[in-house]
Image 1 (cartoon, rainbow, N blue to C red):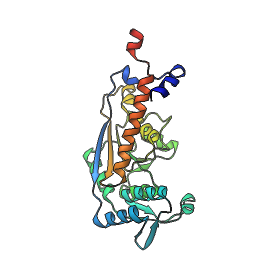
Image 2: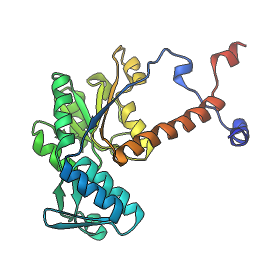
Image 3: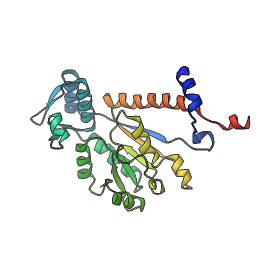
Image 4: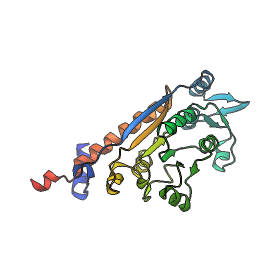
Length: 253
């Protein structure tokens, strides 16, 4: 680590706003759900055998990477049944395994009593299920959708981290709550979508509100490993930034 940062130091300038301004950290709220017995059985079969059956359909993974995706899908509550080629062409069928995360999201929405909420999803079957359970929600997929959310016209917004991230501004004016219905290993889109409503943005908007980040996690599943991995990745990133950062004491001293 020290060798890497020493090689970067003369060509890199890092600035961490938290070194210069009193910026609060987001409040991360893990919300654990228990898989029902039958869903747990299907999950363990996929984990052990790379094959299970749901609703008369075979759910099969042909490689370790495919198994990881199937386990993530089963943790969320719905799984693709088609081949990888069908999924790429967006014609794959899917089946539902459980509704525990949908129930948890409903409780979070009720708890926040009408506050605008961003809900981050990952797989298309989950978006379909979110729309069905919460018909008043809206998928943020176009510039018109973004503008409507910024005007405060959307109480519940479904967003994909890789679609709403870098370059999007204005969400912080109406929202300070995000719920991760699903977690994924990629840290950058995860952090970027939080930053759309994050503490720095809240401060820039002249607002002093806590930023709430809910993570709906299926207990004893790959969800827990993904959550831990995101923390580890952020630790490495923060350490690197800190080693390269220009700080007030470096100037004043």
